Image (cartoon, rainbow, N blue to C red; front, side, top):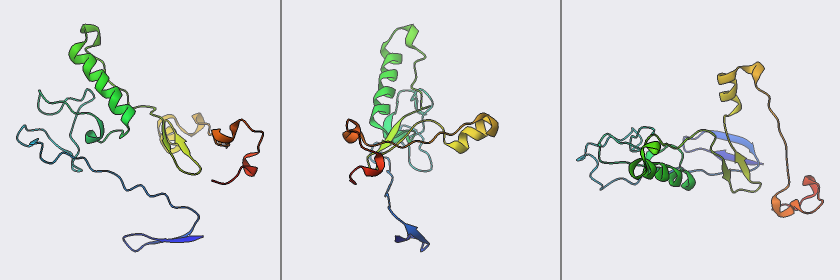
Length: 156
């Protein structure tokens, strides 16, 4: 077991594994956004509405600089919806990307995947009596074709 000391001096005991997720900061310095009157959040992200509009009517923003879901496929999807609205017909004028139910994965050992609400969010939204929680375990796909119990799988 490991002992972790945080930057604030707090101690966390009995840890098996540590996953470091340092986070990101938007790279918007030098773009002159203040001159265009594009507003930033307190964390430095470009403020946008659900259709990537900024506070300047002729400037759009999408992807990591907006701080919603910082995943390349989501930026691609947002860019496609923006292109649909700008260049598509009237039937596409309300196109927008949905940030609900975005699957994501942490390429760790073991890998971690998630989608949707957390248990606490689901209970808050739907009530405890309306939420069922299921848990499962599985072997990585590399071992999926072999008849190997997950407990017997070679450690990676």
